[in-house]
Length: 265
Image 1 (spheres, rainbow, N blue to C red):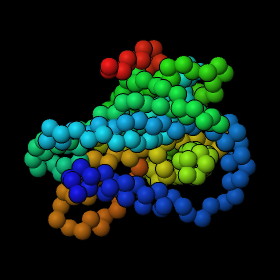
Image 2 (image 1 turned 45 degrees about the horizontal axis):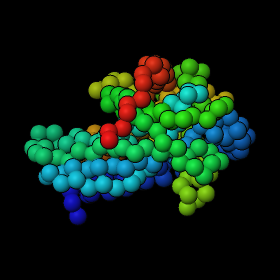
Image 3 (image 1 turned 135 degrees about the vertical axis):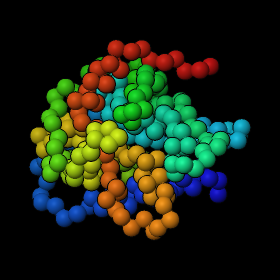
């Protein structure tokens, strides 16, 4: 197995195990589920793309998918930055030679809206590697497109519970699924983020207000797990991170003013 394949598989296994840890006994959230899906499920969409990975001068192409969130009526979409590009040198332990680590670039973005069978083309607008976010835009957005207004956010603080909406793959009918999460703490190193237990994607309050964007820094996690010679039994760093909604909303407002990037011919 090639090195970058091992990296992806290891990172995916970590995410699965961390997501499973969020499945703890809960109170009855059925009313919140119904309200949240009614309000925001249509804005949660599936995004497919072609990932090209270049290693040692050779290119490999593979189709992948991610979750997208509609954040403007013109079809602006919020996606994790790792869906657009991944520099695998970031996964290497500090102090070790990173050599010619593979780099992935994504293209041919396609979006399927809720309740549709059609895959609509979308183009990259911009990305913010510091926030771990990227934005796409539908080429021909339908009228009356539902979206999440990020300006309607509420501040998230440690100890709060949040709720996430995801959309399953075709194998499970492309239906919305609902998960709860909790904000475990806050760090300002190396940047200010909230540490959470949950799943990647937009976090919402029980009333449906956006609270922040949850994702995992695979590179930082893998460096922390592989940087020493021990077994890695300290699990305090095994947490997802939430970028506060004010930062996400500000970055999205800037992205909304930019044109889409024309795909290379």
